[in-house]
Image (cartoon, rainbow, N blue to C red):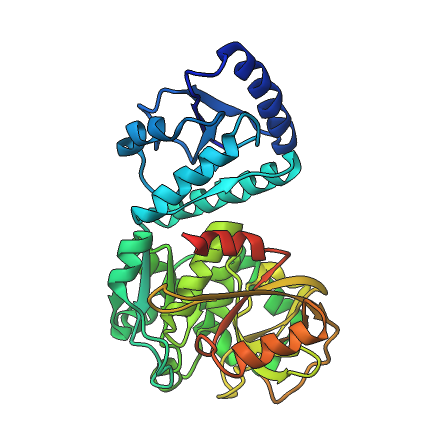
Length: 413
């Protein structure tokens, strides 16, 4: 972690005493964090050059000092305080002033363990924002006609995250598909092909060449347009080439390239945010069944990233019965559900526990049943108030692990 630490200290306080107290406090945080600060003191001249900047308000009486350096500060302001020498009182005044000026920030205050954990989360958030800034996400074909509540605001993506949406006609994919047969597969894709051949799924053999050729064509488009991720109006492929993009998208996701289906741009953006935060692309899935009395949900889809399942088999695409889709076995344990709206004005995040599940033929091929975290009343309220009354569209993204604090911190600013 590249952490810049800047200080504000009132001239009324004894500098030697403040330095001694600060050294002990900061040393404990660094030990808990497992990383060292780049200590800048009161020199704010290079503020903004680190992954995360923190302003350590060491004493009271520093409010005017903050106003003097305010013109050097961009973005959310993270204020660290030990609670000694009226530092918390000054921090509250500074943050209130920031809020009145339309700026955002937070006070990092509490136990050393809490402070270290929070700084670690905020560093990941800033690193993710830097990764997203300047990235390009491809939209191959328009969103599917049934996604009537999943429009995307290009200006909001550009202004808030620095992400550019690149519209690519489906015809470009079809042209690449026609000429990509001789392209080489990546090592990851070669391993999937070997797994397919080892399974001996004879009924799917007729789709194999086309399924891997779709992957090759998407790889061409990624390189040509310098894409960091993509979504595709995949149902158009059913009539155009008699195949589906499920396998190709699953491989791309496993390779760390967020790849969504049905042209769902908010789902793709949610995957891209999650990938920037965690290194995982997440599983774009449909909530298929919800029990508000138990807080249990079943979600399913055909494009799960191959690197987040315990194992996988191959099947046809659920709705069409053609192509090659992934039937993955999701591990038991903690998962996080995330979705952001098409204009980034709203997001949803909750944690759940993945439960044992028996495959059901009437659902998409990779299926996961989970129980939301919390007591019975909390689970019931979450199901009823969010999923059944005020959802953010259809698709939701599932990430392995206990990640709500991380996603919430990203969406806070």
